[in-house]
Image 1 (tube, rainbow, N blue to C red):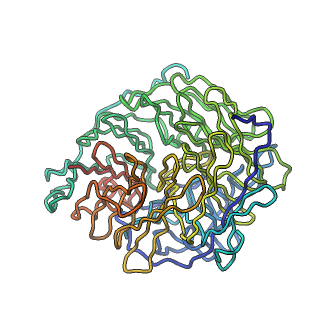
Image 2: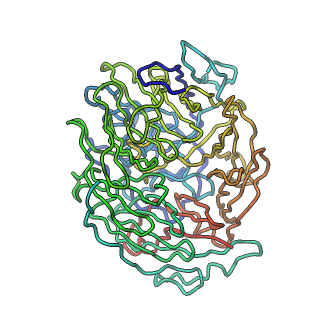
Image 3: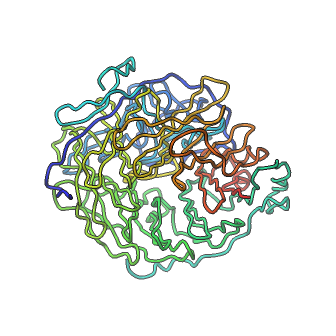
Length: 615
């Protein structure tokens, strides 16, 4: 039964505080670390800290261990949660009274993390945050559920989690064509056959392959002249026999079979936003800056057919009043609708022709972030008086009209953080004042299904991006997760107590919120859920210093992972990207770097950006 947005649904705000866990052991320097992060937008000067090892992120005194982002004592963290208006940032935004600095100095899952907004400012030559953890060269996940999550409490109609200082589990808790250039053809790539690609990649990558190991099918090296600080990578998306990624001022499609460029679409300015999924017929809408100067904003939308690389309609995002800064936009696609969210504002357009479908409601609660796929899920911010705690909602919207099918309203003070899964719907919430974080599952009608609790004290982890994705108005984009109709799967934080890192995958019963089982990674290995595959959990066994990665499955009842595709040990040094995305399709695995950067042009042209494995 649907519920109109004007009615008050059952309340349920909750969360668990992050407890500092001490400084983790220091891993070796990542393979081909980025030279420097993207430039920050105008902000008050801040002296960056000296370089520090530890997951590849500099960390200043006062920053929470495990997050690794610099923070001066007594100051809000630079970047996404300071100097930014709206529900995810500093100053009040417009008449809706979004709270000031909701995540500044918060030790919770996303506090001090670049990703919801501007990239983190760091000293020249600093590595860029990101990555999923795992092998010794990997960046770490920026999200860790703090100490033990304890019992479920219902207080004043709200549901919440908390932990005591000691972590005791018993304590309470469009229109015409844009005229953009046609796709062009670029040089081929290294096939892994020892012949190279013109960049002195002369080693036969399969020469040391052992029996039972997959082949390196191909790899690509960077051929784009990037700005001084490098560039973030968007995607990848697989459409038919094409794998597509965007970077800087271009979107490129490659053959999944041999890695050859099938098409390349130049862009007039920097790419600045992209959805996690394409339409069923392979179309996406991306965000492109409306100029090439420092004053340019992420204000233009460009539709692209990923099958052909042809540019479709292009239009500027409609501004909704003077407080619409068109900064840090997030894009999500559901059906033939593309929704564009940002601070206290939103618009939606038809992907096929660019026609505007709906915008912000004139009063009441304003959608500002979206997650797409089989449903269109929105986070809304409701009008409050300045200084009052935030009031937010989760809604499922009709993708054609924008009308709410149902509304779930957490307890006042709780903010909608991320959508971990759209179907089934799993959402994370944060409470900045009490430094809590919680994960809830909602039913088809938007009522509470359960709250997920790690009843054995496991510290959970999820990768919601680093500097390579803009999350200002986006709920989707987290990885290290999987879900089926009745179970939700997450990875744990790496255990560093032994000689090498290891972790586990935990399964939660969505009907009760309780742990069903925990499956340990192989000794001295880490693994990361990717998605469901034939009823099993598909995971990426991340490479170590001497062991290649692998694609494996875990049975829905748990147990040891079963390897489907073992990557060769001889190429682990190449596979160990600093930060990457992993896809598996058609019996092939694809590892795609999330960022390309180097200290000089020669190194930039030698950066491996993508590689594929298969039998």
